[in-house]
Image 1 (cartoon, rainbow, N blue to C red):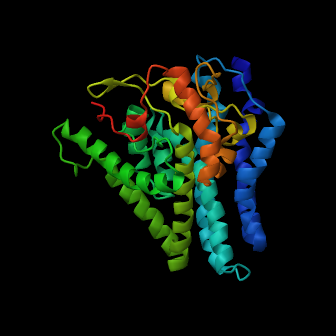
Image 2: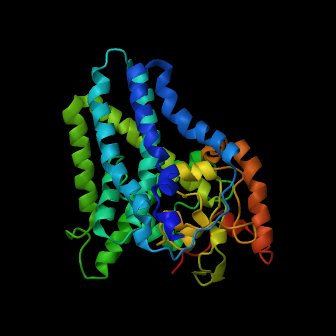
Image 3: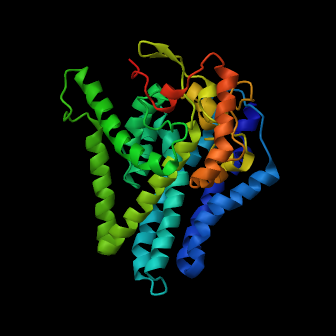
Length: 375
C-alpha cells in the first residue's frame, strides 16, 4: 500500500484535470463552436470514459500515512496558481481577440466557469477540510475566484453538521426540482453561513463584525478578484469574470443537488436526529469521473469521515449506501430535466426509504422539511 500511494503513476489519473487548461486556450484561439469544447469534454468525454472504464470498487487502506499522499496533495495545491493564471490571462486576452464575438466570449467563459466550478470549487472543497492554514487559504483563493467564498463557512459549519435535516439548505428535498432548488440554496446558504459564523463569535462574547470573522477575508479576496478583472479588461473583463463565476456556482449547486436528493436523517423526536451515516449521501463508484472529481462521488464516505483525504475515501455497496446509476456528469445533466430526473431518481429514493426506514409510514414531514430544526 505504501508503494502504491507514493508512486506518481498511481496518482496520475487524478491529474487529468490539468488537460482541461489547454482546451480552454484552444477554445479561445479557435473561437466559433470550439468555445463549447470545455463543457463537452467535461460532461460527455468523462461520461464516455466511465462507460469504458467501469466501476472502481477497490478500497484503499484508510490508515495510509500522510507522507505517502504527496502527489495527491500537490495536485490540489498546484491547481490554484494554474487556475488563477488561466482565468485572468483569458480575461486579458479574450476581449482583445478580434475573432471572438460577443456570443463566443460568453460561450468561452461559460466553459471557463464549468472548469472553475467542476475542478476549482471541488478542489477548494478538499482544501477547506484540511487542518493546516496554507491549504485552507488556497481553498479560499479558489472560492474567491468564483465569488462564492461563504461556501467554506456554509459547508463546514452548516452542511456537514445538519445534512439531511430541515436546517441544511443544501439537502434537496424529494420532488424538489433543481430550478427551484437553485434560487432557494443561493439565498439560504448565504444567510445560514453568516449566521453560523456570527454564532461562533457570540459564544466568545464577540460581535459579528469582529476582525476574526472570516467574512472580512471573503469580501476582501472577492473584491481583489473583481478589481483585477476590471483592471485587465475594464467592464468587459468584469462581465466575463461574472459569467464564469455564476456558471461555476451553478455547476457546484447542480452537484450539491445530486449528492443528497431525497435523503433525510430520521427524526428521533424533540429536534433530535440520528447520526450521519453513509446511507445519507448518494454513492457513485464510476472510475473516470472520480478521477476528474478526485473521488467526490465517494460522497457517502466523505460525510461519514469528513477529515479523510480524497485518495483514501471508501466506496460502499447497496447494503450500506444508495447508488447512483451514473456518475455526476450524466446525473447533473439529468437534473436539468425535472421529468427525467424524477423518473430516474424517485423510485430509487422510495427504495432507499423501504430498505433503511421501513418503520416510517408517513414521509410528508420529510418531503416538506416540516420537522423541528435540529438542536
